[in-house]
Length: 182
Length: 447
Image 1: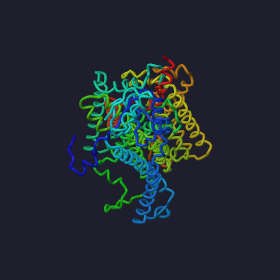
Image 2: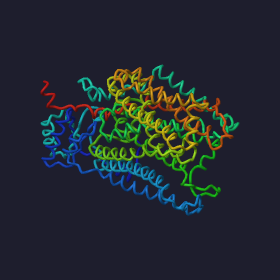
Image 3: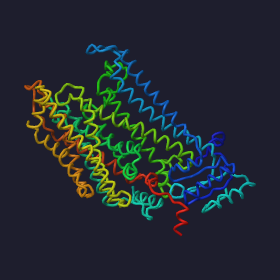
Image 4: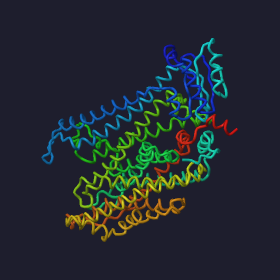
């Protein structure tokens, strides 16, 4: 790994968070664990899954992703840029053709439409990357397993030395295949 | 949907698709070599065109839009079904799209990349390509936003950008999945490309939302792109071009040719990579149903065009369509009609729809037919231009036209082959999504 200078290192490489990582082979067991953790007052745990599932989202009770605001603002900005680009350039070089107005809006709608889509899509991508990176920063360095992109589900519960045993018992009780401490 | 046999588990899906990467076989190198050889022909032809000028191509008055523009429209059209399958069917929640959409989407990106080359070749002096970009300048070039050619530039530019980011976005979780199985330089490549994907609930939350919006943006985009391409012609007053039916006619034709190309590409890939359990006959049947639907719309548009030419009583329009069917290019017109409107009617028969070999053959004929459709619309309408019959000439493509066209196929297949060998050609996470998830309650019941 590339060494980073001190302030950057503190921001991008936070120290590992102590806690418990449970590996699940089954979706319903994972959901059971999520429900029990939430009932037990845990809020800052992380769920790993190879696929997105609505059951997991519902069990976590997550709010709708803020990506939609990025898309909306990007789209509106794109439309405005399309209108500005075409009208400004037309009036910048006022050449009358076929007796039509210099700033004819109907043909410019095509360009405004395309720019809406372009800016909207790029803003969506930025929104996904920004929000995911932001989430990753908040999580810090937590335990992870390479099988989570294949066929296993995982739950990581941050826990100090006093709470580790309780979290372990809870996760095992829900049907975790393995439990690791970190 | 893949057969939900107990054998097809999450792990099976990951490993089957990860197996398609790495250790290319001799057959793969032969195909790649053929593609590169075709590309070399194209490059040499282009060098000749640059050295001796566009006169080498068969342009003759009044046909100054010919094979290059035909190929441009052909490749843009090929691109469209990829977005149909990846975005529109995503919004429709069609489960079957998961196994085939990645191939279709990659095809979209590479087809637009191929199409983008043709306007550059067509302008003759590629080093002045920036003259096409509209901005206030000191060169005396007027940025005319009322021209459909400028709209086209925005449409194709947006389409290329959006379909590329859509493809990359869909790839991220899958690259992460193959990253965790890979070793050596591939591991490093996939680590870089997966941008740190771990599959956390936060990542999925933003990803799924964002993907939905990308699909929702790509859907109107794909319909707009070929409409704008059609307006390149429909906005002109050439009989045979100047028709209001052009936008839906072109969009249906584009999706039709694209679906045919997806079949043409998927048949060998499925065989080469042994993906029979993930890409089943059911998928091919659904693709051929899409072909049947869009092919029928295209057939209807043909009938409409001829009917309106007769019914309008416009002598120029009548002359143009008479020339099209019975003039010196009758063979191109009838190839188009037979390949696009009649041959696909065979797909009404379930036996043919579920026969992979028959589908492969039909899809190739549809590709040929759709190329000729653009040739007929562009070249034949110009050659038989009834407003100035004394200026008409019979246009014939030369070796330079064919060389560039061969090169475009080489360029497309080279990128496509490189893609399928280095990145998952079937979506790993989305195929898993349509499988029943592993449940403890079920496992206990079975035990």
